[in-house]
Amino acid sequence: MNITEQNITIEKVKQSKISQIDFNNLSFGSVFTDHMLVCDYKNGAWETPKVVPYQPITLDPSSKIFHYGQSIFEGMKAYKDKEDATWLFRPLENQKRLNISAKRMSIPEIPEDYFMEGLKTLLKVDEKWIPKNEGSSLYIRPFVFASGLGFHASPADEYKFIIACAPSGAYFSGKVKVLIEEKYSRSANGGVGFAKTGGNYAGQFYPTQLAVEKGYNQVIWTDDNAHEYIEEAGAMNIFIRINDTLITGPTSDRILDGITRKSILEIAKDEGIKAEVRKITVAEVVAAAKDGSLKEMFGAGTAAVISPIAGFGFRDVDYDLPEMEDSIAERLKKRITDIQYNRAEDTFGWRYKV
Ligand SMILES: *Cc1c(COP(=O)(O)O)cnc(C)c1O
Image: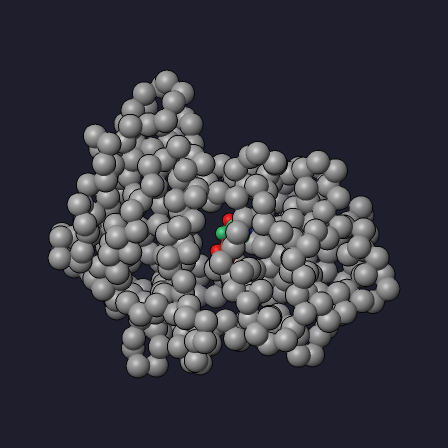
């Protein structure tokens, strides 16, 4: 069946809770809009999506999500411009990646029209929830999980696809201190590191907690084999600037193909900023920190866009990064957010009007 906005049913809340929200003091992802999109997979097919009031989900204790972790998600944002129009940023990339994650986790794929028409319908119903304040946006969380029953370790026969939204302020405030991790790994060859699946993040919490206890904000993941190469910054892709060249690792089984990362690479090319996609060793970064050629490091992802790194720890030594006037991180962040909020021309065709 083809899904259009016409065949998505909408059940509205009796009373909106929007008047209880302080849009000037939004944290990240902790208050939710009035509605959500729900779509069930049963008898081998996705049913017609529905917009319903935001509400808890009741699940049987044997639902496979609880036991075998079949769950995937996406993270994206909706932005308001000065004329009150609503925009998304490269939403089809999220739709495609959700299905890349789905395939790896034996979850049935979501057709493009279910995802896009469902999302647009939800955004129209909850339009007033998209913040207009500078730096704020509506964080959108599409996710799919196994609702099918049974303790047998096999893929479920029923799933739920939900989109929930949270009006959010900026993700990080200030620069972060990171610890280069040499014991724990986020992902492995042949594993699921490239998928946005719940367990990847659960597995990061403990090593990150240990880093926090040592005074760091975040962990820099290295390869699982010899912990020789820099891979990701927490749940963000990482960029390292040595002299005037930006470097980021190639995507793989282990490194997630971030939309912010690939947008940054295209913007860098457009602006004549030298950028290299190649493996980069911890040793190279430490040497660059020592000789002063290490200028910037930053994480890249939808939530924070760009999260500058102030310094890193490696084998009990802390290395500070210099304070940069006119940093590449700031320049890239401005260019990308100007496109997202419709403040500048979008020569790439990334903006998507809702
Ligand atoms: C989501 C995510 C990213 C960033 O992807 P974006 O599409 O830029 O938001 C990077 N690394 C990991 C591990 C992620 O989960």
